[in-house]
Image (cartoon, rainbow over all chains, first blue to last red):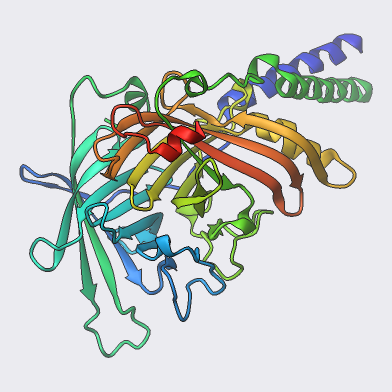
Length: 202
Length: 237
């Protein structure tokens, strides 16, 4: 009886320790990435944001109907030139895969720009800065400034374009969507950290 | 036969309890080392924020957590790929508690979490804009193990479902080798900046029903080599 109790005790300790080591506590849901390879252009991926359905918030001064209702934007005058939006982000198959922030600052002190931060939980986060004025009147093109995890060893460009909905028959259709196209290529250099390799970024 | 089975089950239960206690009280996992930036002579930018969701401009999660989204009608992150994530948008203040800018924090539970190592990891990123100065991106891995152990679990064990006290801790544990976050400058005076940061939390009250009741966070960012500190920054130091 005592031997059985001791055996069970050891099994309990070893089992708990093994479970704590081997059983993943967190398992993020993954959607397969929809990536195409451009000739001499790296890996191209399309994201889009349906407006208004994917918009989580608009942070801007003096809004008649704030989104979300009840939002309190800072009243200080110095925040008047800052506009922040939060969105849900969809992949090319229309599935929500992440969240993103878009920040626009209108200031005499710094150059006007549009900034995006995309957070895709199963893959990582990337940050891009674009000029305020579209290059061809339609599309803003900016540079990837930083990335985490899967995006850490990448460099490339990110473009933004507003695509209005032209289907007048569908009353439930969104007004349009923001199309984001990324074109990233891996950098094979000493900058690639061991942790990036361990995470399978390559 | 039955007494042997009962003995085995009792032994297993005792073993599980002892192993869980070892994990919980593991002194090697309870480290809260000094931030390398706290002893740095470099130029440091200090940004504070309230860790209480109702003090934020927007806080949202999957809507099933005890910490409720704010404002009440904000869209929730219920879709499967983002349901283990949260977003905080808040005013960042300088050391004198004056509003300095806007910060957006994206956080997701990390798959590298290993409780046996005392790691409850969260991958997070800050997208920051400091008014009339420029913008920054801060990437970090945070460890909430000590926060859970010292604040959240005691709140659950309390008969009042509440924790009160004083707890200070550095949350950042990476990706920098010294447990620092990676900072990348975006625009304005921060353009081209590549540096380090540490995020710390100062908690004094936590409720099981509401989450943090009195909690402040602070981002300490090394801006040496890129940014000439303003006279106000120097005075604050």
